[in-house]
Length: 99
Image (cartoon, rainbow, N blue to C red; front, side, top):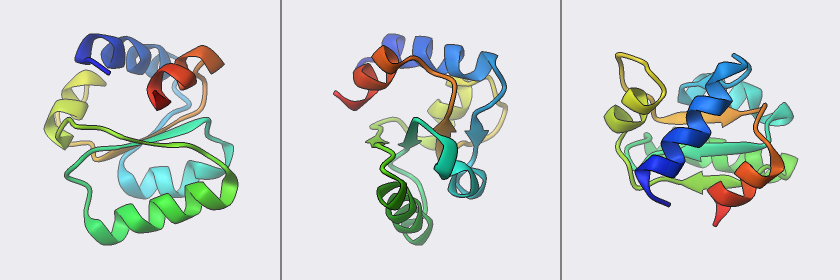
Protein backbone atom coordinates (compact mmCIF):
# COMPACT_ATOMS: atom_id res chain seq x y z
CA UNK A 1 0.00 0.00 0.00
CA UNK A 2 1.33 3.40 -0.88
CA UNK A 3 1.58 6.33 1.50
CA UNK A 4 -1.30 8.28 -0.10
CA UNK A 5 -3.82 5.46 0.43
CA UNK A 6 -2.57 4.79 3.95
CA UNK A 7 -2.69 8.47 4.83
CA UNK A 8 -6.28 8.75 3.54
CA UNK A 9 -7.44 5.73 5.58
CA UNK A 10 -5.65 6.97 8.71
CA UNK A 11 -7.14 10.45 8.43
CA UNK A 12 -10.62 8.92 8.20
CA UNK A 13 -9.88 6.70 11.19
CA UNK A 14 -8.61 9.59 13.30
CA UNK A 15 -11.62 11.82 12.57
CA UNK A 16 -13.93 9.90 14.87
CA UNK A 17 -11.45 10.00 17.73
CA UNK A 18 -11.97 6.32 18.58
CA UNK A 19 -8.59 5.07 17.46
CA UNK A 20 -5.96 4.15 20.04
CA UNK A 21 -2.60 5.73 19.26
CA UNK A 22 0.56 4.12 20.62
CA UNK A 23 1.57 0.55 21.34
CA UNK A 24 0.39 0.38 24.95
CA UNK A 25 -2.93 2.08 24.22
CA UNK A 26 -3.43 -0.18 21.18
CA UNK A 27 -2.77 -3.23 23.32
CA UNK A 28 -5.55 -2.18 25.67
CA UNK A 29 -7.95 -1.33 22.82
CA UNK A 30 -7.47 -4.41 20.62
CA UNK A 31 -10.74 -6.03 21.67
CA UNK A 32 -13.04 -3.51 19.99
CA UNK A 33 -10.81 -2.71 17.02
CA UNK A 34 -11.23 -3.54 13.35
CA UNK A 35 -7.48 -3.56 12.62
CA UNK A 36 -4.14 -2.93 14.29
CA UNK A 37 -1.33 -1.21 12.42
CA UNK A 38 2.28 -1.77 13.55
CA UNK A 39 5.37 -0.01 12.24
CA UNK A 40 8.71 -1.68 11.66
CA UNK A 41 10.15 0.13 14.68
CA UNK A 42 7.79 -1.21 17.34
CA UNK A 43 9.70 -2.71 20.31
CA UNK A 44 9.94 -6.50 19.85
CA UNK A 45 8.39 -7.54 23.17
CA UNK A 46 5.51 -5.09 22.86
CA UNK A 47 4.96 -6.02 19.22
CA UNK A 48 4.68 -9.72 19.99
CA UNK A 49 2.21 -9.06 22.85
CA UNK A 50 0.15 -6.86 20.56
CA UNK A 51 0.09 -9.50 17.81
CA UNK A 52 -0.89 -12.25 20.29
CA UNK A 53 -3.74 -10.16 21.68
CA UNK A 54 -4.97 -9.29 18.19
CA UNK A 55 -4.88 -12.94 17.16
CA UNK A 56 -6.84 -13.90 20.29
CA UNK A 57 -9.60 -11.44 19.35
CA UNK A 58 -9.53 -12.11 15.59
CA UNK A 59 -8.29 -8.62 14.70
CA UNK A 60 -6.04 -8.36 11.61
CA UNK A 61 -2.55 -6.94 12.17
CA UNK A 62 -1.11 -4.81 9.37
CA UNK A 63 2.68 -4.63 9.25
CA UNK A 64 3.66 -1.23 7.86
CA UNK A 65 6.93 -0.45 6.11
CA UNK A 66 6.87 3.08 7.50
CA UNK A 67 8.79 4.10 10.60
CA UNK A 68 7.13 5.33 13.77
CA UNK A 69 8.15 8.91 12.90
CA UNK A 70 6.41 8.67 9.51
CA UNK A 71 3.27 7.16 11.05
CA UNK A 72 3.18 9.92 13.66
CA UNK A 73 3.28 12.53 10.91
CA UNK A 74 0.52 10.76 8.96
CA UNK A 75 -1.88 10.92 11.89
CA UNK A 76 -0.94 14.50 12.75
CA UNK A 77 1.00 13.80 15.94
CA UNK A 78 4.29 15.59 16.70
CA UNK A 79 5.80 12.41 18.16
CA UNK A 80 6.59 8.81 17.18
CA UNK A 81 3.66 6.40 16.89
CA UNK A 82 4.60 2.71 16.70
CA UNK A 83 1.07 1.24 16.63
CA UNK A 84 -2.53 2.26 16.06
CA UNK A 85 -5.70 0.29 16.80
CA UNK A 86 -8.42 1.60 14.47
CA UNK A 87 -12.08 1.20 15.36
CA UNK A 88 -14.19 3.40 13.14
CA UNK A 89 -13.05 2.52 9.63
CA UNK A 90 -15.20 1.00 6.93
CA UNK A 91 -14.88 -2.66 5.98
CA UNK A 92 -13.56 -1.64 2.56
CA UNK A 93 -10.78 0.35 4.24
CA UNK A 94 -9.91 -2.67 6.41
CA UNK A 95 -9.66 -4.82 3.26
CA UNK A 96 -7.48 -2.15 1.65
CA UNK A 97 -5.17 -2.14 4.69
CA UNK A 98 -4.83 -5.93 4.85
CA UNK A 99 -3.94 -6.37 1.20
